[in-house]
Image (cartoon, rainbow, N blue to C red; front, top):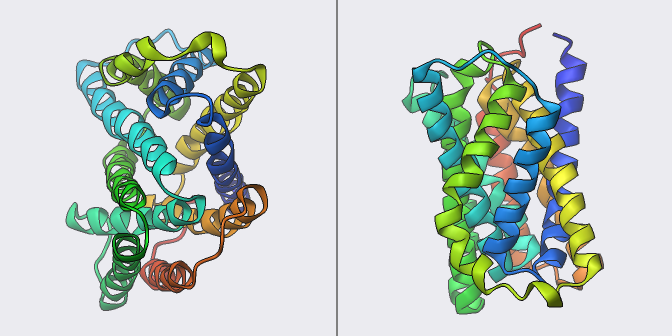
Length: 292
């Protein structure tokens, strides 16, 4: 597989995920976070069921695996991300999301999928310290809700990193598009108990057309296209290499957050971002080449 195609796919995913911070913030001005999360997942599942067609049934073990992947990569990931984003700023959320490569590499090393080195361990430690700096900064200088939001984003990172690592050995064997489509279908069902109360009490008649338009864009771009591209790339690259593209997000998202919402660029968050980026770079230096 062409290295350029893999990197182009990963960069496109990063761009779409960066735009998602702004779009989701705008959408959650009208929708409750858990309502927005379920609508996003359910709509994506419906689209993928039409776009992705594969009549061959999954084996029992693969069906069980996809159930777990859906729980980690869709239900927990989407719920915690949108709840966290609703409670804190775009800048804090985007910087903390860069902890995904750290968690991914650490879990991959523990699972024996990637080789531990002193440089990698040092990079993980530095990036983790940067993430803790952001959370600590929110607890000392931010509001209580912003601190809770930062913690939820970190938990979201851990859940998504776990999904990346445990699904990696199977993505090349299974159809990535088929797996993601099934994940969203399962996830939409699993999320109903979580989002049910929010959906029942949503003031549907008061939601303006512009909010539905934002939801439609989020479903099409940062959800359907981004997840399918990332799943395809995961079948042709190390899980840590896929996750490393996360560092593009805070640069773009923080800039957009400042422009759209007038968010101030806080020095402590900038320092944490430098620590995390440096840690990710150190941790990824010795990663293996992308298979051709």
